[in-house]
Image (tube, rainbow over all chains, first blue to last red; front, side, top):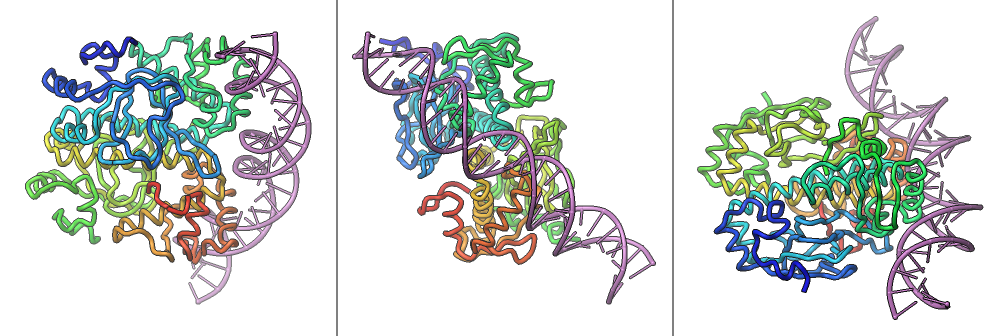
Length: 246
Length: 246
DNA sequence: CGATCACTTGAGGAAACTCAACAGTCGTGG
DNA sequence: CCACGACTGTTGAGTTTCCTCAAGTGATCG
């Protein structure tokens, strides 16, 4: 029995203050508790498929998932990297328009779609929080458009590490990344390439190039050590005042 | 005195049923009417600048604007094409994080930011509509990520015309584009290139290529005639069932 | 310990970019 | 009304970046 299975009370939930329930009061939380269910999905499994009905909407409690589209000829683009507190599914739409796959083992807090839609309608705290989260997602998506449209392969890879470092720091602690940060990579090289709009070979080469330039170290295939976060951020095309969006 | 200046009643507004006010009842509309103001901006003028405070939030009534980011070295990426009923500015944020520029003459329906934020809080119809619009924008942004990340230059240009045709058809009439459609281009070649993550030269070459392939005609620099919409959509990498998002 | 899979590296080619010249369009003023 | 100039768009030639194909290396797991 994993740790999450034993959590049933929302006030013990690791994403309590970041997820769609963040603004809920005790009574609202009780309502959510009554209709939620947990589900754990193994790494590599499919959470939703493009065009298929989505019976449940959910929040990621732990783990990492990708949201992607695959064209008929096999080209694939990941349009969202889903980390703890991120939301899966769109209220008001029956089907997912993207494939959602667990990159690592993922634990979800799920709600039956209709039930959740009703709660969004009836509970301003949920609606307001969902709006804020959606606006944040929109910023992230637009920020990523700049990366995809205008950055070089090297900048894209650097930007990916920088963005992931920011989000992981946000999740565990809530403060910006330390100067020296170690990153756990939830994605394979192929998945990173699909996120960056590159091939796996180019991605690999640029990771090597960043390592040779001393901007990162790679203690293992699934880990990246950033000796100087600011320096890497600069390499990712950020003006020195950092900033921008996650 | 232009046509819009004379419109003061929301029920005569061309975006009445598509904008953030779409779900409002008579009483709510009256409230909006009391605090709204119109503003017309000439083509080429700046509506908002990245990092600068945004005193008003607004809806586009007529015209077209671009939302873009410029990197220090001059590279620019447009992250959103704003057409009638689209919303400018983010409730809850004081500054714009993008440059917003009028591509053509633009007429706005504006609300003082604080006032609007209060109305969002107090008016579920506005909050709900804003949520739906934001979710739609998110879909558009993610769809565009696929274009930016995985499409060839030719597909990008085709996808741009297809997307624009869909949105223009949506605006004037609400139905999908006819088989043969004429498109009014609100953007210069350079602005198109910035939207597609290409150079102006590549964009121009691909427009020429599409013309030579008979997929489009170019009656003028700012117009595109699509003889067979489905055929162009296919060229844009859509599987024959069309669909996807605007 | 060996097979499989993920990742890396190399060589060659294709797509898009850069730089440069040219053409078409539009507005202004003679 | 035409001539001029500035600007926007097109086309061409050469270069760069990234992709493709292929082989090699390293990790992981039975």
